Length: 256
Length: 274
Image (tube, rainbow over all chains, first blue to last red; front, side):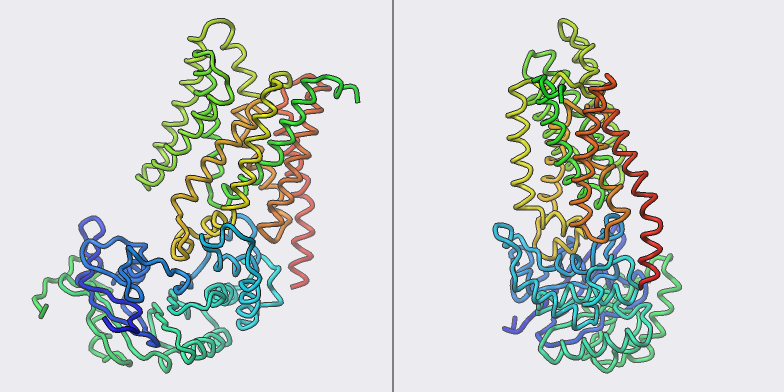
């Protein structure tokens, strides 16, 4: 395992009710990579991300973050995720400012007041996504693209070394997409390792250094792992599998 | 005010103020986690504790506290173990709580089962002088735990998985919240009653959130509304001679209605200013 290893996944398998969702995933991500995790619905993209973050138990296999096995990993401040939405913010009003600050809450800080430095970092993050003037507004009154930007600010405010984003480009208009790609380019240039879960590379393809394509497969989930663009024959396959989502996956005896 | 010349009334007012202050502070987390009915169930479980206290001749507050806390752990355990059947399992626990309470009280010697009513709907005269100390201690405990763990509980109730990735121990926070709700149920048991105590956790929060824009403001306004409803409801119940629980809850609901009316033009004006 190299010193700049960020994510290491070793023969990871995940099953839901006997269905194989992930099979023998091997993935090694090093510092500074910009990964696009691609694949059709049901190919296990989100499951893989959840497994990497310790939210999804593995049937077999191992995951390590920054060289530390997940079970012993404690440096969670180095990791941040950008979800598609913040479901809890729709019942009680939550201001944009509170949502962004919530990213800096850690068990370590429980015995002292909320640090001033975290507030300043949250302000810088909100300014960088252009939402500082909206900080007192309810998060759920913002447009979809603005909410996404607020959640990005939430993740950025902790200055993570690894940033994981779930479908960040979905439903963004051109202006928001432009702002997002500029921001991602800056982060990538600053050395942040970025994993983007996405259906398509549109808009961010020039930033991606490596594409990882998943599929429903009985033997091995990763079917392409290399520089973008993804070769066309893999793309075709993606759509076939999408259509076959309800049938059991074909048994293939490929190389282990 | 002549009612303050009665010792029992002074004690009841203190108890009402404490529950009016505390209940919305816990309720705001429950509503955000979509567990608004959790406090209700906790009240049912605490009733078994009251029945047990009658039967065994122990003090009602500690016995109810122990039962409700055990219920809180059990509820969190059930919720964690069975994602889908959890709903039904909780219902079973709640029915068991009420049935157990009434049964134990009926088995108890004397007129215990008739005084059960005071625990179901609250009473002005049941706050004993020793209770005030116990209630104050419980109150300080809740406030101290909120001061320490409140931020983590907030992050958890926004999104449990995001919180977990920040290193927050979600199960621990979730159990702590359930235990705090159990404490509030016991604090409110005397004056509001076990069947209605969860209303004072939820209704002020539901009222406040109609006009607020942040979690903090919602919590602050809900505490204010909770205090107004519980203290004025108690006074009303003294004057009109009805049980305080229903009076307090109806006043809270009236505040909800008032804020619902105020919220309409407020929201319209905000939308225009955007």
